[in-house]
Image (tube, rainbow, N blue to C red; front, side, top):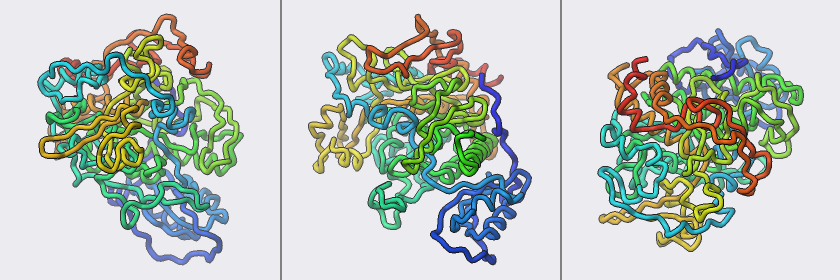
Length: 579
C-alpha cells in the first residue's frame, strides 16, 4: 500500500498543441537587468495557459529557451536578481527554480558513493568463484554467456521465451545515460529512428570543475546511439539484448529498444530533460520505460522543511509537481513506468534524517529532519510507478537496496556482491549482474586496451568478450544495484505487453494498470526471513544497513508482491490482464 501524498495530485495544464514540443521564444520587451545569465525551470500554474507563463517569464526579464507543453515546464535564462521570487509571485506560475544538475543515476543515490554500490567489485577486490562458471548445455533460444546470467534464470526468461520472446511492436524506452546502439547484442533490437537525446554535454561547470569532460562530438550533443557512461547500455542489455547466438540475451529478447537519454555522461540528470524524456515516451508510443535515476540535489523533496530556505522549498515543490505531471501524462498515453527503488539501504516509509542535501553544488548540505508525509524521493514516490527492490543470487535482500511496504511493488535480481557470506562465493563477480558494456567505456575504464584485448584489471573484474564469425566484438561487465533489478522487471513488463497487448490508439499496446496487475499478480511470493530483522555486520556493513522485513509472504517490505516471473506472467497472467 502507498501512503497518501501531499502536493502529488497530477494537475491538468491547459495545453496548446497537446504534445511535448519545444516552443521557440518570441520577442517581447524585457527589463534591462545586469548580472550573469542563469538558467531556470519555470512550471506553469494549474488552470493557466502555458503561454501566460511564458509571458510572465519575459515580463520578469527572462528569455524562454524551450517549453514542454505537455506539462507546462519552461526552461528560461535570466539574471538571478530575484527572478525566482518574481516568477513565484505571478499567478500564471506554479513555481520556479534555478536549473542545476538535479537528478542522478541511482549509483549516486543517498548513502554509498558509486563505487561502493554498482562497482563495488572495483573497490573491494573480488574473490575467484569456486571452479569458475560452469557452462552447461544451452537451452533453445539462449546465447553462450546466458549460463552466467543467474538473474535471467531467476525470472525464468529462458522458459518464457519458448512461449513469448517479445513482440517487435513493443517498444521499451531506456531513460538513462544513453545506449550503445552499435553493440552487437543491442543493435538487432535498437530503433535509432525513435531514439532521442535530450541533453547537451557539459564539459565543466561555471567554476571550472569538470562535469562531463571534453565533448566527444562536434556541438557537444552525442548521437542517439552513443553511451558516454555505460550505465544505460547495461540496463538496455538486461531488458532486451537479442537472442542471436552471440554474447548474451535479455529478459525480452524480441522487443524493440529505444534510447531516451536524459542523463549526462557524468551521471547527472536535469529536471527538464528528464521530464522531456518521460512525456516524449507517451507521444512516441513507447510501451514501457525504465527509470534508473532519482531527482536531486535533494534526496527528499520536502514541501516546507523548516531547515530549508523559501527558495529551496519552492524548488522542491516544483520538482515534485513537474515530475508527477510528466508521469501522469505518460500514464494517460499508455506508458508503463518501472523505477528502481534506490540504493540507500533505507525504509522509504520511515526516512532517516538527511544530511546529504542539497548535494549540488557541493558545500550546501545541511541537516534536515524528514517528514514522511510531505518529503518525497522522485520519481520513486511519484504517481503511477512500479518500483523494484533488489536481491542477490541466494534471494537474500541486497544490503544496499531500499525497502519498505509503503513504496515497494516487486523485487528482482539486482546483484549482491557480499552474498553467500562464509562460502567461496562471497565477494565474487558472479554474484553481480552481467550485461552489455560499451567498447569506448571499457577502454576509458582500463579494462580493455586499444587493441581490444581484456587487460589484467578487466580480467580481475570478470569482463567478458565475445567475437562473432564476421569479426564483430561485444564486451560485457558485472554491476549491481536496484538499477540492475529494475530492467529485469521492465523486461517482464515488455513480455506482458507482448503477450496480452492489443491494437489500440492506432498502434499496439496495453494499459499500464493492467500491466502492473499482471506483473504483481504473477510474481513469486517470497516470505520475510527468519528472524525478520537482518543485519549485515558479518558482511562488513555498519548498523545503518540493519533492516526489518514487515508483511506477509504475499506482500512484504523486502520483496513487495514477490520476485518478477516472466514464465508465470506469459502463461498465467491473462486473468490479471482482464481485471
